[in-house]
Image (tube, rainbow, N blue to C red; front, side):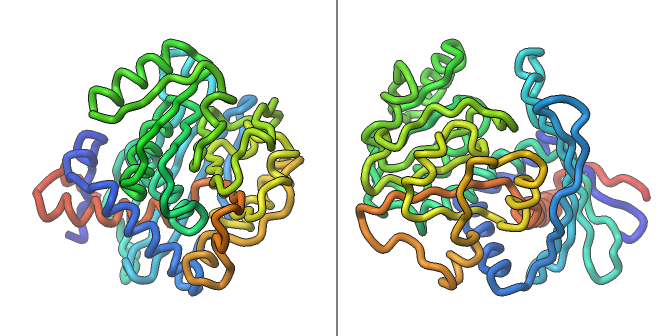
Length: 323
């Protein structure tokens, strides 16, 4: 209705039942649209009120979905020490014919799931299709989301090694994943987790001035590295050693480079939209080392939120609010 919008709490968002497989498909489709020039997405704008903390506004428009949206998201790495979530925020969704708001919803679940989904799409084009060994560095929300996404995309994964510098977080993660019938092994250090892995996911926290540890000799020939935490864990030597280096959006990566991030990261070869549309090459050899650096971009949130909204309306979930 023109005089109201739908409010969806985090519980409402989860209740819609949108699956990881559906999100992966939606995110791949939207990157295809990006490669075809059928989206609008200015670079994130934000403020940095504290070290390793920022608040970003992320607007985006997707032609096929006939919706636009903006996510107002905060990332405070030190919140974990306070017993608070590191990521919080809201998503606003508008239909594009009149510009009227359709919904306001919590974005925590959306952010977690769409990030894992985007990484799974990158892995589809950059990892070996027969990948069996997965390494997860960082056992927080993204460590969980990425495990779900990668085993959805690669059902042949048989061995999962996890590491977190916080022993309690690693122990909790292993127990939780095993309870969900995923056989995760706790690695004693990052090197033991990474060595021999076909897919390496690093999600240990985003830092402007990192102290990276992953060496090039740890990365097997043919491995795919998924950097969810910018360049925080990969040494410059490791990044220069990969044969294929992509990101989700080149303009946003260069924006962050100008603001002090990615100072030791070599130039990327293209973005995920170019990969999905075939404008740039993905993996062409089983021995290539490949890497994707994902910043998280608005169109992923918009398409995920649009599908949540559709499901919520169909199922009668959420609270109508007057405008």
